[in-house]
Amino acid sequence: MKLCKFTLALVLVAAAGLPAVAQSQMSLNIPFEFTVNGKTLPAGHYSVWATFRNNNGAWTINGDKGVASVITHSVQSPFKPHNHSLVFVRAGDHYFLAQIWNDAYWGGELKLPDMKPLIVAEKDHEYVEIAAK
Image 1 (cartoon, rainbow, N blue to C red):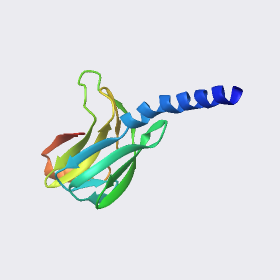
Image 2 (spheres, rainbow, N blue to C red; image 1 turned 180 degrees about the vertical axis):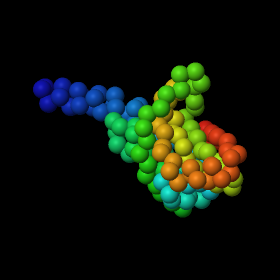
Image 3 (cartoon, rainbow, N blue to C red; image 1 turned 90 degrees about the vertical axis):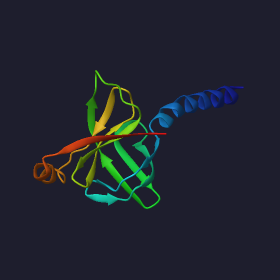
Image 4 (cartoon, one colour; image 1 turned 30 degrees about the horizontal axis):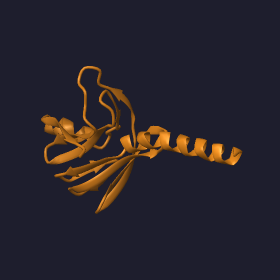
């Protein structure tokens, strides 16, 4: 009887953790080539998820033709809610992954040392947000 109760408790604890994992995974179609952590990935379908279960600071971006890992720091958007999405900075013909939003008001932001010289040179840049499916 004790084994049955223990097994039931273990299953309930495991099931309680599943929604948190599911919320951290996104599926997106990105229509342009983009750079993340100095690596250029082609346009295509990507899955994005938190690399570690209880840490939304490390992310894996996996596509048919490439994979990348990123570390982000927490960012808040208290006035504008976001869908689950990726935000890119477009400077000229180049797109750089800038943010990952896995919650309406909380997301992760990447350090973008590779793009700073390009933004200064281009002077025109915009943010492009791609929502998850």
